[in-house]
Structure formats: structure tokens, C-alpha cells
Length: 147
Image 1 (cartoon, rainbow, N blue to C red):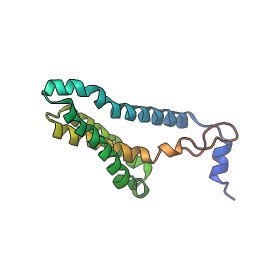
Image 2 (image 1 turned 180 degrees about the horizontal axis):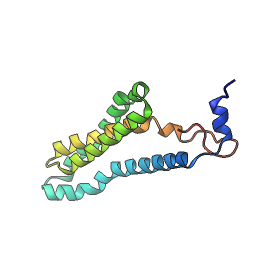
Image 3 (image 1 turned 180 degrees about the vertical axis):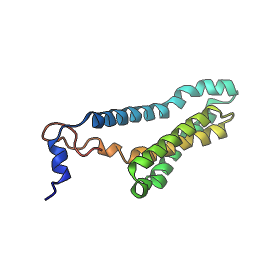
Image 4 (image 1 turned 135 degrees about the vertical axis):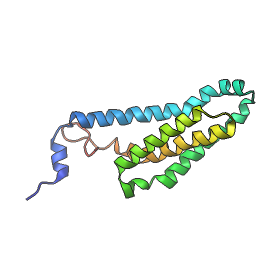
């Protein structure tokens, strides 16, 4: 008779790979938060270099929130159809693509479009794994059923 996988996971200590996955996810969540805040710190320099009012960059900040909402609602269910791993990897590629594109923007509209893309990918990407991190500890104190 086969054993229950949950029992096996609860009894075994977490492997280095599992701890590495947890550390990478925590690090990526922290970087994602920094990405959201980075435009706030960069906006005075961008406004000065482009010769525009700092208030005009408020549109860029709101596009990030709109991108996050759209990504969470429209792309969040993709993981249920194609799997979490493929979704997370695709979202990471989308975030990198949007970040590199934002570096090449020449006006507020381009910057808004490029900044909404990584925000939507970010929201879709982290909607799935983030709630899984604080799972209950196993009897040995390790995080169970994470990966």
C-alpha cells in the first residue's frame, strides 16, 4: 500500500533545494516591492531630464496599480491551467521584458505602458506562491507542502 505524500513530507526535514526555493521566493518578493517603489524615487530625476512637471508622472504610478489589478484578475488563473512553475517563469520573463523596456522609454506614455507590463506580470506571478509561504510547520519545525 502506498504511503500518503503529506505524511512523508511532514516527517522528512526540508531539503536544501526546498530552503533555496523559499529563499529565492522571499528575495523575489522583496525585489518586486522595490520595483514598485523605485519609480517614486526616480520620478524627480525623470521629470527634470524630460522637462515635465512631476505631477505628470502620477499617471505612471497609477498605471502600475492598474497593471497589477489587471494581471491579478486576468492572468492569475493561468497557473491553474498551465501549472505554477511555467506561469512563474513566464511572468519573470515578462517582468524582465517590461523593466528593460521602461529603460528605453522616451515619454510619459511609453513609460506608463512599459511600467504596467511588469506590474501585471508581477501580480499574476506572486498571486500563486505568496499565500503558500506561511504554511503550517511540520512536527519537526520545517515548512510543509511548499514545493
